Image: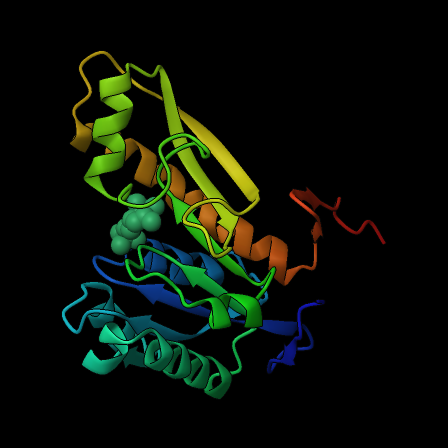
Length: 223
Ligand code: GRF
């Protein structure tokens, strides 16, 4: 499905991006800052959080980004979660949904409503070190325990299976001999903060073409 675009105040169409978080929100903040700094034709239309205390919410409120905290009922019941997410995404006319450290499983009804328009950032090179339970520190511990020489970050399409959608962008970082989960996480996070805005920019500029599991990036329009 082609991405619907709403008109911004400038001549350029703006992509409405909803960001879903559960914690610190550093990827949301990096994205928000990059959209402004690099004049990417996209805006964050809302931040949806599964936790009222998520760190990113303070930043969102300070920058007038609409915030929605999911209700306790939505966190308990899948049907209610789907309803609340879809209601919020529709209300804010979201074109693209970005999962940035969102720890709830997105209900299938929402995944299918946003098929090819929902992306996630994962702190490893998928398909390695992904799947249920592979989040935060667990990922980096597993990479170190395996003895990997490289790790990295992946931005991928969201499907109903954890971390299994087609990759859009991936970038490596070295694993150093004296790495701890913390030092490796920090090196990967730096890359995440570059990769996620890049992916959103590609959507905003209509450069993503999805053919089955292959996500192609169209060359820049030279005209
Ligand atoms: C990131 O490492 C991201 O890859 C993963 O969750 C973490 C979220 O970090 N999905 P932050 O909340 O964006 O700082």
